[in-house]
Image (tube, rainbow, N blue to C red; front, top):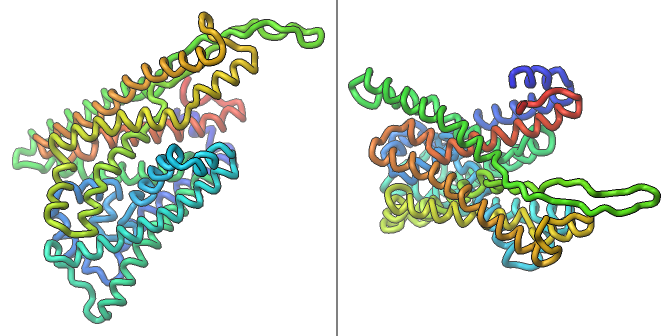
Length: 426
């Protein structure tokens, strides 16, 4: 892998893409520490540290920007929520479903609507956070030298503009950098909390030696789990495909065998991101309406038995849902038939479609249950130990970090292969 990175930096075009991506990510992290104008930074930080679990988890996905009430405090949540809504609309609204099948033109339409929807959700979230932080539970007093209405407008405008800027940076990385920009921003947000969590874990109690041992044990378990996660990310169910012999001109075509690869976890980290977003959506509503019972419900859904059950159900649901969105057995069967291919022992047409559907349903379930276990078990351990390192290295964090890292490495590898270099995965 190190040799591949060295070779990548020897290619000017690829080196510029990597440096551009790193530069954007550094800019994002700097923005996470720039507070919104007029915010009493120290008083707000002290008040935020005493809040519930739901706000802590929202802060984790923002990379600490929410705790700083920075210009990037809303993080990627508005965009993720908008993306979920657009994914659901593709299966509900026929017009949006047709856009998804129209190629580049349709994707541009969906992207444009997602942008507008993101800004609308960001506006709602910004107003909610403003009302929450000015409420009695936080009691944040803004700069009294500035009129209250103007101060409120400035806070909301800054938060919405920050969300738009994050979205723009993510698209810049996707277009001119390496990897998926939005995924990399989420990745860097999660990773940024790890060093702080390690030091916090070692100082969790008065027994420093025990804390160091526990921290080392947690890191060891994470290291051991990484190969298993990578194995599941790369696991495939290969359906054998044969091609009938046919004469084309004077040449005999076909007759060879191949396979149709179906990934065990075709949805990647999307199910766990979507599930987390929906679970912590009540926390966003609680921030908007500042109702006691809604805040209590948000905290209940953010930890404990309710959180574990909901996380498992939603991950399995989104694994099946997203897989059905990105893989169409009907189109696959038609393409096989046009190319003269067939699955041995299965009749072409509807029988092939049904066979692919059955195999897809069978292989998706273990993949979905695996990522659900990876996500829920660390949450259970954190519930009983309250160790911040377990929270930072929770299943959600690990899957996001590994999934995004593998995806980015694969994209770099594909470009390295264009120059006849060995890739990461030998």
